[in-house]
Each structure stands twice: as C-alpha cells, then as structure tokens.
Image (cartoon, rainbow, N blue to C red):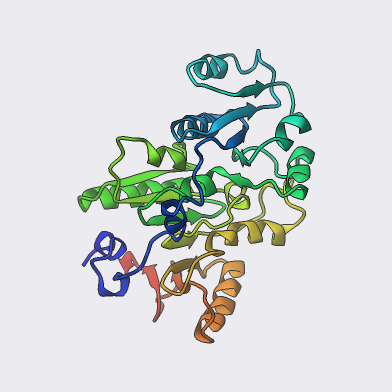
Length: 297
C-alpha cells in the first residue's frame, strides 16, 4: 500500500470519507454563481484565473486593482477577451465593492483594506482564491504550508503521485492557482496545494483531506502584528478538518511541537478535529513519521 492509494481511498481507514464537504453545497446550488455579481480584487495570475472561471460559471464579473492601467497593460489586453461587467484600475472604490454579491481577494491583496472591511460590515461575503476553488473541487486535497520548504515538498509530492500513476494537480502558491484545477477539460484524481499564510487568511470552509505544516519562523512581520498572529494564519489550514482527516506537524519546530501536544490531547478527548500526527528529522517516533539516519520510518 502506498501513499497515493491511502489518500485516494483504497485503504479501509479512508472508506466512506467525503474529501471536501463543500461539494454537497455545490450540488444543491448554494454556491451557484450564475447571474451573481462577483468582484475579483487584484489582477495577478490568480486574479486572471479566477475571472476566467467565474465567467465560465455565468457570474457577472467585475475586477479592481490599485495599479494604473499603464502598469496593467498586458493584463488588460487579456481581459479584453472576457465579458467583464466593470473594470477599475488605479484604486478601489467603495461603490463598486458595495454592489457585489461576493468579493474574491487575490493572495497578495491585504485583508486590511478599508473597502474590504466595509464590505464585511455590510455582510457581503469576502473570500480568498483557495476558498473559491475549494467550493467546486470534488477531488481530495492535500494542503501544505510552512515558512520554508513548501515548494520543494509540494513538488516532490507531485512527482511521487505521478510515479505512482496518479493524476495529481500541483498548484496554489507554487505558481498555478488552485482554481486552475477547475478547467473544463481537467481530469484530476487529487490536488496538492502549496498554501501561504496570505491564502489561508481567506478560507472559510476549505477542508483539505490532509494538511501539513512544515515549520513556522518569523516572517511577513509587516503584515502580522506578532508571531502568534502569523502562526494562527498558518494553522488555519486545519480549521475545518474533521476527525477522519489528518494534520501532519513537524515536531522539531518548538511552536508546532506545542501545537501537536495540545491538539493530540483535544483529539483524544473526542473533539471534532483532525487527527494530529507528528513527524521528525531528529528522533524516531512511535507515532507518525521520522527520517533519521537516512531511514524513513
């Protein structure tokens, strides 16, 4: 039995597990986008991919970016082929934001923007790209975050599943937006997503089948008030997981070691949280995994 078979349900412990709870809502139409006014904030790679997806869903899509039209020349050329309801550049107007049914924020856009705060106070849903994608993805997801090593690990995981003969989408913060997994001709068996703290700020119901946190060291101190806020953003990866899901934590990291011990106690007390599992490169563990002396256990 290999890891690919475990994740895709050929292991008895996986039988009967629904990979993403949001799929039930999609099927009942709760997240139908046809005719809905949706604003995409930020016109980077993720923003463009979200616009394409939303247009395919029949949404009335608008876009907003604080960069000037001159700075967005290449992006605007691509947007000419898409049926945008409205496009604003050079700043964000509250009037455009306040008329939306849904606002989707690109990863690099600060959630502290005043126009986003105002929208939330008026009960306009504001979500990130990962949240949007996860509402429509039906395949199981592996989500991986951490300060360092994310891209290397996600790439390695993708190659492992490929070698096992599995069709694994690899994306997220690694370069290909998660919403690209929803292209019309896609035929994936699972998704492996690299997730930044910025992306995890915008999740609401996102639920990966397996979540991994590699490490947490001080970073993005211009965005987070302190290290605890940064850690909280990272740990948001497991916020919606259930007892049948898994959360892998690097216990060589002191802060994650504490998280593991606290979560393990809560899981043993019967709380509806994911199964925390430790991994280490320093010591062989009775539970979880380790890589010591060039040996994987």
